[in-house]
Image (tube, rainbow, N blue to C red; front, side, top):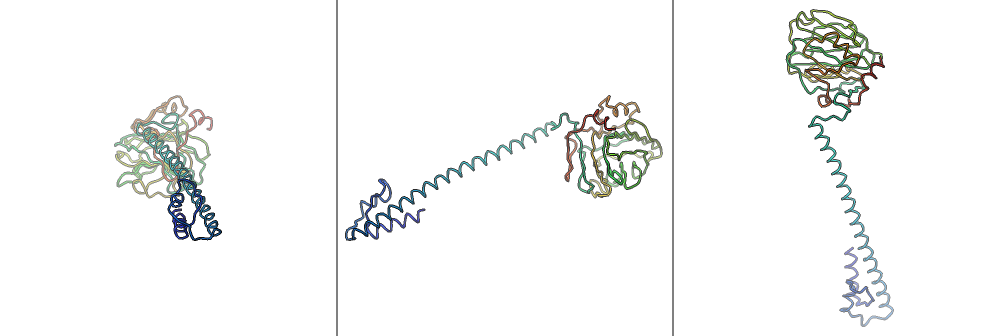
Length: 316
């Protein structure tokens, strides 16, 4: 813009042209000090017209630049407001998480979805286990994967990746591993419906029980007898661990949905398990309870609102 203005000023000085410039403008000020004597009248008229056009062009350009400046300011302000709004929403969500609030109707009213057989979709339980001499682990699951539903959960500690594992791999039966020792469980859950599963174990004689939908379907002994469950390991949902917290094998991955994963430090009575399975009682695990802020998901796994217990029962 100022290059055009400079050209116009130079033209006036060289030619000494007179015009009727806009009062108060740069050209009006120059007009009073520049003589046009000695120029033919027709040349003077041409120069005056061109100088007037040049000034009008410059004024239009100034107005356009002022408009663009105003628009840029407005866009910058709007962008700043959107950014601040997004940051405030994120800070609010962080505050909710820090306070332990849940995005769901209640802190336990969610499920973890693992839709693909990969080695990178999984959930991780934030808490770890203390030393245990007995336990009950219960969960709801739904899967139609074949062959085998994979690994609903695994617990690994330094020196023993298979401290506790529940797995159905290939065409093998569902297996419970304790300290890498194996018991085959008579459970059948790969029909695409919700099922409530519980396994109990005690170090005394390695006694174990397996429940499906409140019914005891299997029991046995000599599963890692007198072995205490080691503390401080990593609990993973949906993958079998070959090292603590990692080295997942896609062929052993769980495909489906999990919910209400709870662990107690004792063998629950059969009636307690029945009551949980038929929705007549809600009894969170005293070691690992199923709560939103205790379950992290990774690799594309997701958390969704879960069907009510009664709706899951209708699915059986």
